[in-house]
Image (cartoon, rainbow, N blue to C red; front, side):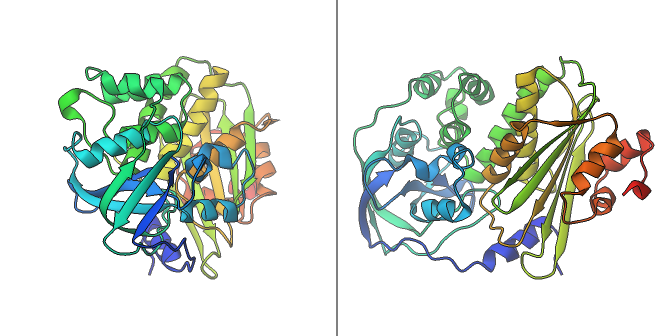
Length: 386
């Protein structure tokens, strides 16, 4: 019996049979730049670079912001990611001035890909797929690791040297300067931000959610100052075996994320949902990092338009879907919010519009959600409408 989303996705990823790059116990290549820090055995974690067995500009392998706008296929993205070989050494998260941590900081703050050389105790093997982080290829413990000289990004370098600036404020400042999320997340993960003695290495999947949540909270402060929109709007996007629908409500901020995984393993129809009222969310979401990354993407668009709205976000994942990490949600919801909106005078019309696109009946989403039922009740919209 499947007990929840984490259990379901664990089974889904275990069913995948995908091969990655084959490399020996010694390799030379280019890091995009890319690093990965595990969470197992925290605070003594396995950290290291991710290097491709090729030379030159490998930035596309770890730049998820470009994949959706450039219409890369799922196969393209998997091929990119499985070319990344993960090197590992055990390190304490407080050891941000150790030899390995300093090399990881060089990589994360670099302006361009870096030539490198890694020696492993044994040839790297395996692959990793997750709904939290992007996939990567084989991994192994490292004997040694060397990189060429590095030129840092000036904005990231400024944040690194400001040891009086809190990590959250550094993130927000860099985000406002226009740095890509992936660059911010890597710098945050390697302990390149924050007040001096409090700097830590942060496991990759934790750092992704921390950055989404921190940026989202700052955006929400801005959005709360704006007037609510004056009609119902629907933004839609199809990509990578997923459909996304964002219903914007003419209300102060409130938010619900509901996702359905349809017949991916067999004949299952799994639906997961979580929400927050205007006062915000307490505790970690039961649906994981997707909740925070979607919230950030919606608030980003509202802040850009200087508007406020409630948001009901529906996602369907179809046969052929492969977990690619929460970037898949962030960048696709960004894609949806960049599409022209369909406008409606009432909630019923907006939901009827979406129901023609969904594989599941709208009633399934209503029954699994909470906020959507509350909004329907307040707008006197009934299930009989669908």
